[in-house]
Image (tube, rainbow, N blue to C red):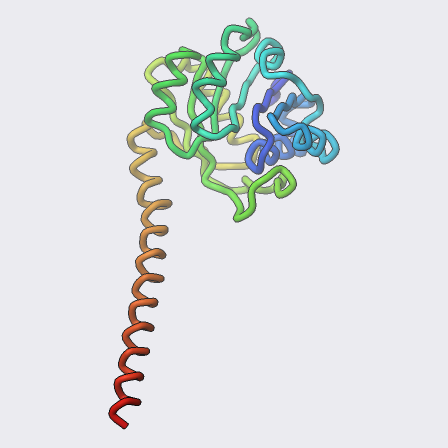
Length: 217
């Protein structure tokens, strides 16, 4: 993959790691970045996560590939704000949200054939660009989630992006993606919560039994 210009809106753990990986692997020599936090922008420039700071509207007019790495709740409003400034050279728009059914429906209605959803199956316990790494996605699986409107070119660019990060692309429908994430992400959390609750309950039962035994003695 070799893009003339890649834009990243949202410079946290994921956005920062994408930028660092792209530049390390020479997938692009021009990575534009923006974040609502100005300190994150400064850190991104200093740490080599992006080559230029750029406002979202200008970024949409200059980038060949646009990556939205912001919280899911901000995706729709951000897209509505930025889409009118899209340049003729913008070939694909993608996101990194961990939920897809609603996001794909919302963003495909705005970006049309240019939009393809992505979700990296990788991360860290600590968020923030100061925890970002060029190697975060090495060997990780990425869900590639096209919409019914996605063009072949946009899908190919999104897939090439994943490969440029030295990751493994897996094409899924929005429904397949959300079903898999529910099992692999949410279920372990529920099991962990149940285990902690059970342990607390057992500890309480043992404590009560011990107290009863002491009274009998």
